[in-house]
Length: 271
Image 1 (cartoon, rainbow, N blue to C red):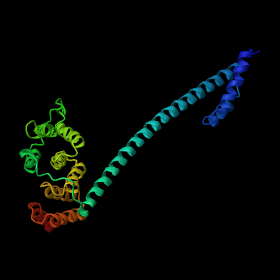
Image 2 (image 1 turned 90 degrees about the horizontal axis):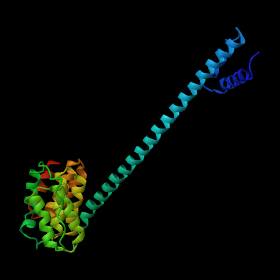
Image 3 (image 1 turned 90 degrees about the vertical axis):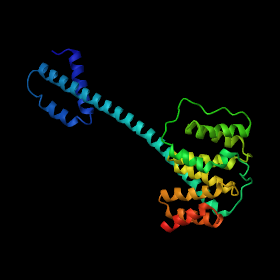
Image 4 (image 1 turned 45 degrees about the horizontal axis):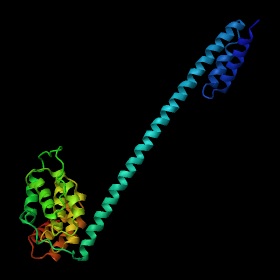
């Protein structure tokens, strides 16, 4: 006579075999094949079937858990990618709004004619910076602390470019300077520098934004013609021929006697 434990185990095994959705067919086939032999042998066989089904259920649960972890990870990556894409789209929108506003003919509140010798030669010096853009930045050097004097802080930022070749630190210093001294006559030069530095780094959208800022806010600055021309060059390099043509035409219209207008005319002839 079987013990109560054996009877309980037999009942439990039958219930598990019937409840397992994925292993039900196999379980029924296995149970139907246990129709001969002693009761002890059949109970032993059912125990093996029950254990196999329990292992299968455990494996399925682990697989489901692993799949859920993968799904959660992918969901987080998708959200991050969506945020980054939205940032890029917003930056592009700001850039094209800035470029479109160039044709409005609005003049800036200030002129940049009072800049020092280093600032007055920003266009030529920026070319030198571009030629030397392959040199490594000194990552351990920090941008100079601001003193509270616009001229001193501007000269310190420009020294990072012309003397120390620390372009990333120069970007940080100039961005801080632009925010701190909005009324300085060096504003067009500082924005021009930022446009050139970002261009050297290959960040053309940021570069075009700062060049366009020079034209939009400081149209009377000596930097404005070349800044506008460089916006056109960037649009041409981005294969936006329509925008490039419009900007080059604006250079010729707005600054007809400048060297930039002559260069814009050559570019237009090649488009």
